[in-house]
Image 1 (spheres, rainbow, N blue to C red):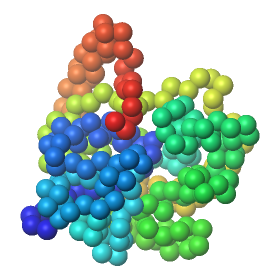
Image 2: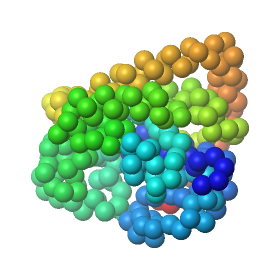
Image 3: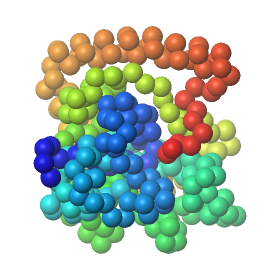
Image 4: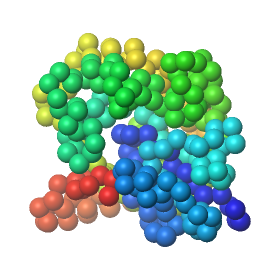
Amino acid sequence: MTGEPPFLFLHMPRTAGTTLNRLLERRFAPKEILSLYSRDDFARNAVIDRERLEGLRLIQGHVLLTDYKAFTFYDVPVRAFTFLREPVDRVISEYFFLRAWPQQHLHGLLNEPGMDLRAYVTSGHQLLRYKGANFMTRVLSGLDPDDRPQAALDTARENLRRRFVCFGLTERFDESLLLLADALGLTDLLYERQNVLRRPPGERATPEERELVAGRNALDAALYAFAVELFEERLAAGGAGLAGRLARHRRLLGKFQTLCRLLDARAGKEAGAIDNPKG
C-alpha cells in the first residue's frame, strides 16, 4: 500500500463503539470507510481488490486481525485501536442488548426458554462459544484463552501496550476521546450517546449471575486492570495541557448535549435512540 496504513477499529461489543463510530464517520469520507458488522457486510467484502484497499483510511467492525504476528487485516498493515470496558458489566450489557435487538442473528436463540444469562456465558452452542468468556483477551491476542490462558493474556497486554496506536476505556470516554484525537487527528469531539440500553428493573443480573460472569472472565478482568494502569500512565504523560483540554471539552460538550436533548424532546425522540445500531 502507498501512504499511511488504514486505521482499524476493533469494536468490542457494548463499549460505546456506536457512539464512537458516529465521531469517526465525521472524520473520514464515506468512500474511505469500510464497516464490517452484519453478515451481509462480511459476505460483500469477503474479498477486496487492491484498489479499494488503497483508498481505505478506516475499517470498523466486530472483527479480528487477519494475522496477529504481522498485525495485518486483509493482508495489509493496519493501525489498530479499540475500547475496553469492565468485563462483567460488558458481558451483562451485551446479553440483554442482543436479547432486545430483533434484527440481529442471535435474537431468536437468546429468547428461547432457558437461555438466561447463565446459559449465555456457559453454553457450548457454536454461536455463543466465544461470547461470554474472556472475549476481550481473545480479540487483543488472537489466541484461544481456553487453550493457552497465560499466553493469551500476556500477548493481549503486550499488543495493547506496544502495537495498538491507542485505546480507550468506556468508563473514561471523554479522556479516551482526547487520546484518540491525537492518534487519529480527530477535531470534532462532540457527541450524543448512541445505542444506550435502558433495561427494565426486571432485566438485571443477580449477584449470583454477576459472580458467575466474573468467574468466566478472569483473564479479561486482569487485562482490564492492566489497561486502567496503562491508561492512567498515558493521561499523566499528557500533563496540565491534557487536563486543560479535557476541561474545555467537557464545558462545550455539556452545552452541546443540552441542546441535543432540547431538540430531541421537541421532535418527540428519545435521546440517543437509533433504529438500527449498526446501520
